[in-house]
Length: 154
Image (cartoon, rainbow, N blue to C red; front, side, top):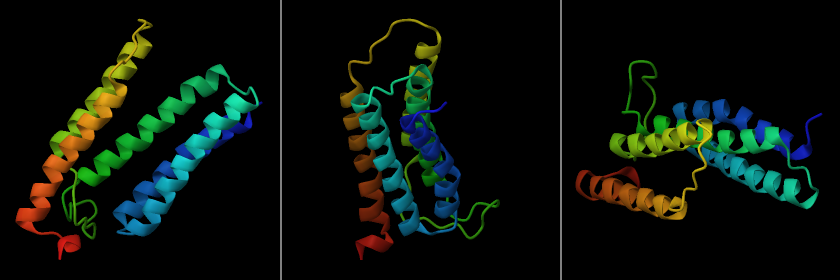
């Protein structure tokens, strides 16, 4: 039987195709709402698992997998160029640079490989790597917005 925490994690995984569809359909406000809902379910499943002692091996596997799938899907979709042949009506005013997408996904792949290889490895720089990704994102996206113009910049 799945615990409530595991059900919330699975629900978060089910939201991923919806999020991708909304992004590709240029429904960015709804996509943001789904992304926020995914974040809330992530916080709730952890809280419920700890508070009501619903920790399980399947939850320990599914929760980080759901996080990685969600972030990977977002990075890939947000790195797509405008009007690709497969989705010609897709338009994104601000893109995530492909290089940042590669760095973020490579980091997650590296962590999964280490975890699956059963080597005890603690990522001490997890918070630091998030800051590095944020700084890189601002460094890549801000110049594009300033020099090439974007819808939000005026």
